Structures are given as structure tokens and as C-alpha cells.
Length: 274
Image (cartoon, rainbow, N blue to C red; front, side, top):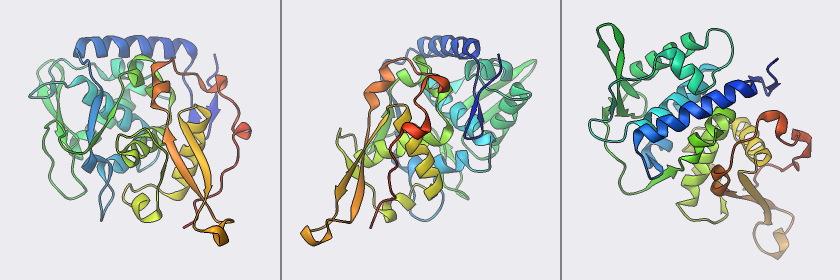
């Protein structure tokens, strides 16, 4: 079956999606994780440089594999010392995440090396076997990484349905990032929130990335957007966007790209006014 494309992405076939989702479910079961997967505030936002989350998707096509690998490793590494002693091979990772394109196992191997070099994980060689993977707490560029500790204080969490229902396979990397960003903006409350430009800058996403990811999340029924007036009665023509992530949707099976409404079916939303 020929893979479909949208926004420059190659999409896995139905067979690849089904195999990947089955392998992800087994990974969740093996992890014995019962709760959502936490991610610290400092992973998502910084005040003066690109935060770790945004760094994962910078630099083109490789960012999608890097992001999905790191999120999945975080889901799988559940207790101290937060390692995966017998990790999947690059080929197994590629099938688990339904990585498409030429040489998917090599893309995974390159991404694992990048995550190691940039301080997201530590790879420890093992004779005659794939390297052990240890989760780290990544820091902003130029700051040494730290041993992983479970987030405390303010953090966001992602439901296990992201993996068990195949969403992580189908969603573009930018959409995954924006979903996490809006979760942080909502501060664990199930409410619509406005994101002013100075707060948006802390997440390191360009305006184009924000817009494309927002539209994709709406197609997947994962994001609600309201247009509301800004200011008093004399400013009624100035509008702003309020956002709410529909996290409950992750409890249902993900839809392949060809099953989603076309992009033209999504109502055009103007950029936020300040």
C-alpha cells in the first residue's frame, strides 16, 4: 500500500499502525505503569533559550523520531535508576513507533545517538547487545543534564492512551508538542485559556509551527478554540483565541490521516490579537 502524505509527512500503512499499536500496548503493560506520564515544567518552557521540548523537534525531519522516542522512553522507565536494561533494537523501535521512510532502523539509531549526545538519555554499551538506556533530566542548551527524578511541583501529565490507542504513531511531532504546551498553559485545569505572546515565547515555538499544529489538533478533535472579544465595548472588533485540550479523546483509538476531515473543513482562525 502506498503511504499517504500530508504537510510533508509520510504516514504508515494500516498494517504498520496496527503492529506499532500492539507493540506499544505491550510496552505499557511491561512498564506496569498505572498512572499518567509526568513531564516537568522546565522541560516545556524556559525564559531565555529554547527549552528541551522545543529542542527535540528542531532541525528538520529527525525531530519527529527523537520526540516520540524520548516520550516513549520516559513512559517505559518507571522506577529508579530509570533505565531500560534490555531495550528494543533500533528495528524494534522503528516498528513500535511505525517509523516510515528509507532505513527506519537507521533513523532510530541516529536519533538515539542524538538523545545521548544532547543529554536526554545515557547510552551504556553492553557486549553483544543493544546499549542500556538510562533516562536523564534534560536541561536548556549549554547546561549539563542531571540524573532523572520524578517531577514535583508544577508538571503536566500525558495519559497512557497516547500509546495504547496509537495516537503517538499518528500525530505529527509539532502537534504532540503543542498539546503538551496547552496542557501546561491550562495548569491542570479543564478550562479555556488565552496564551499571550510573551508566554508563548517561553515554549520556543514559531508562529508557523503553532498555527499548523493547532489546525492539526483541531482535525483530530484534540483541541477546542474559542474566539472571544478582547477589551471593553469599544474594542469588540479585537479578538483573541482561547484554547482547551480535549485530553479525554486519547481514551479512544486514534484515526489514520485519511480518516480525518480534510484541512479545508477546519474553520480558519486568525492569529491572536494582543
